[in-house]
Length: 421
Image (cartoon, rainbow, N blue to C red; front, side, top):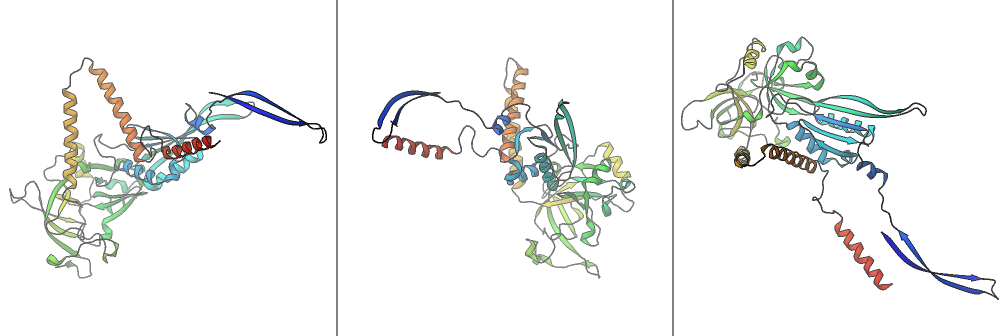
């Protein structure tokens, strides 16, 4: 862009008694060249990153939910200072790639993630170029964060052989467990708790112990295999020295928060029935659960039905050989209490997705390979945009300037100044 400006130059020549004023008008032509700052120039130029953080979570089954990645997305979206140094982001099959200009920023990013979810961090480096005379080198660093393949609500077998290698899960080694919570460690709860203190039914599994004996922790069922049950009767177990059952009847008080005055979990004996069988047959199941203070008669809970489920051959063999001699496999494992509409909404969304997929399959085209490739590319772009917006990398809508109103005000003020000039 060029700007033509006419300047008026005025100067006084000579001393005060004999001062002469000289004035001349000169046309000046200015050339405007737009340039980027060094940081933006690096961001929009290829091969300028110095460190990359690769987050991966590999599930035993491809269709299993990856709740660990969702937790990381929510944590990154809430923290502005963590994501401000991220140059770019890519969505991969089993996770994300984050690119940084400095290795220190990448290391702080990986340490932040390790506090959110249990993972194994490993660093590698690659020499790109080297200047022997000036003793300089261009090195690119890769930090790989492998998350634990377990997710919340998974039904896991803790092999009894893990204790021999020093990677056991404490009191829950050799038992069937539920993943209760994921943080810097994995919190496990006994799927068939014994009638003792409730604290003995919980155990923490550090990420180092899991990666040391990964083969000893096998996922039997994921959360998409949960079945709805209706609670018919709940009888709390009394943890007092006398040992017995409390008789509270229908006046039982449920846990409603830290101010309730009692613990969230309690051991109880429950009688449940499948929701699909309710009213058609009289088949009921009796089980021991840790949800005693959360459920009451008439509630709907999610659990695993081990009676009608078909296990693969490897899991069948491990069930017979991985448990302790005192462990008895339950018929039903209760996981959590849910609202009545939560699962129906998920089923409706899944049904809509399957309908869309079937409609796409019915469309005929001349080149199916080209359409398949285009569909794959569009899905990848859509996943990338969705993930970037969830983590807060895209605050405004695409194609809109977030400071558009500010630019408009400055433009009007500039036009007013030009009119008054």
